[in-house]
Image 1 (cartoon, rainbow, N blue to C red):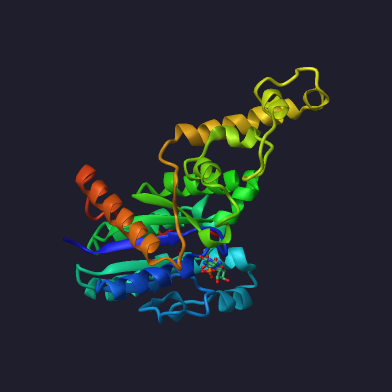
Image 2: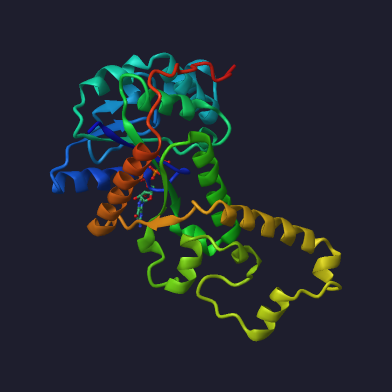
Length: 298
Ligand SMILES: Nc1nc2c(ncn2[C@@H]2O[C@H](COP(=O)(O)OP(=O)(O)OP(=O)(O)O)[C@@H](O)[C@H]2O)c(=O)[nH]1
């Protein structure tokens, strides 16, 4: 057995720190040792004191002030600095024994999960070489997004982007389920948990009933309708293509998280353990890949 780690990611305010705390609480209840690493250089209040806190190395506020950078550029700078000082993580993590679950609580800036290769390099360092941590990514998206379908699909695309970029075991989580409980019918919710590509063409909000006429018009649009003449159809085709892309990439589905419900937290942790074990069985690691610390920030 070797160390297990979970990289808790997702957009700002998705509930990453709250989920990290729920995981720690669950580990305490089930007597599983865990270790908490805060990698958000702007995070301030914690339910549980981090065992490693990036702010002991560098803080976003110092970088913004001293380098005259904004919050996004400042965050990238902080991570570049972390990659140049990986001993800050390696030394304490080397001391963590194999039975521990290591929770990495990440910042919410979306840039980190899309186009800059910071996280792939960090993950490579954690998973390969001497640390040899078996990792899984947990990408959180707020459940309230389901009432705004374009927003939900945009969030799903960012989860996919993180999946493709990191190439590691990955689960997606719909967080804050308590906020939509009772407002979205189970059958509607299922179309989001396992994203249905036709959702973007369906004008109804979850919970609305569709009348026969609307359903017919959606299945069989009138080519001469005003919307089509004004270019609405090409927008619909784009939506359809995006929905299909997500559908074809059949690994994109969501688990439900309600942090108040101990069982849902435990179920997600079991998925994380299973995803890691499955990945380990499929793809033995290549040790000692060099970490590229140049991420092209100027
Ligand atoms: N109702 C409800 N609120 C939640 C839940 N999880 C988090 N929140 C609230 O959502 C807000 C953001 O939660 P955080 O855990 O700080 O989110 P985060 O993703 O760590 O935020 P950043 O680090 O700023 O990106 C806080 O006000 C939380 O109390 C949940 O499961 N249900």
